[in-house]
Image (tube, rainbow, N blue to C red; front, side, top):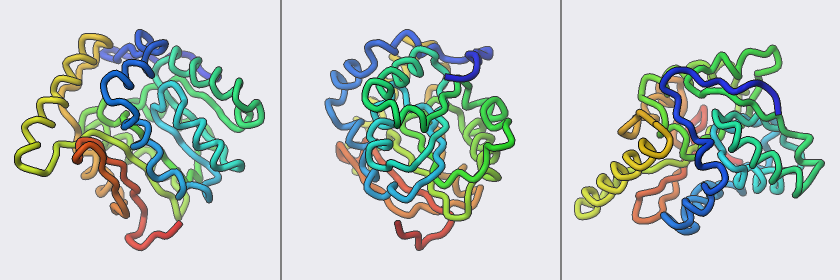
Amino acid sequence: MTGEAVNPRGAANFDRLAGIYRWLEYASFGPWLQRCRCAHLPLLGAARRALVLGDGDGRFLRRLMGANPEVVADVVDLSPGMLRTADRRLARWSPEARRRLRFRCADMRLPASFLDSADAQGYDLVVSHFSLDCLSGGEVDRLAAAILPRLAGEAIWVVSEFSVCAAPLLAPLSSTAIASLYRAFGLLTGLSVRSLPDYAASLRRIGLHLDREVGFLAGLLKSQVWTRSGDWRP
């Protein structure tokens, strides 16, 4: 694992949850967050260079490395505890897969802290599962703009996020559920963000197009594939 913890003012402290995050997640949503993360996994077999943003305890990362024996990945998370958990998970499962990973302890709000090296280019896959919701709209704008020059020509960006349900009867319930999650994470980690950013607008501003989408729990969870063209095929 490389780099020291970047802990700028106002950063949330997810170290407090590193040891119990999996069980908190399962108690709240059962298997659905992990199913959402892995919804597009069969499409990622051609990726060779990945940037994984905020994967937490590494459960998706293990699935990705198992499904794609050639991909190498830079894994970025603000929490040293989460990165240690992911590192141990991958090392126990497959030392060979672990050697294809570089863990970076850095803040997504400060993209220069992990996109500063000469070889940080040519990503054909970016993954952000339930991590953009920790940023404001302006912070997502800056992150996307910083990543754009590092994308390969046929790059895809896979996003899993919470969403307000489209159905009129479910919209108030999903809004209440999301607001409750923000309050809980604010208390547990000090997260200051209180509403979902319009990450779709940020991705469109850098020229990406929504290629496909899968929803879970009546649309409360969404997994999307964004591409640089509207007719991408794996």
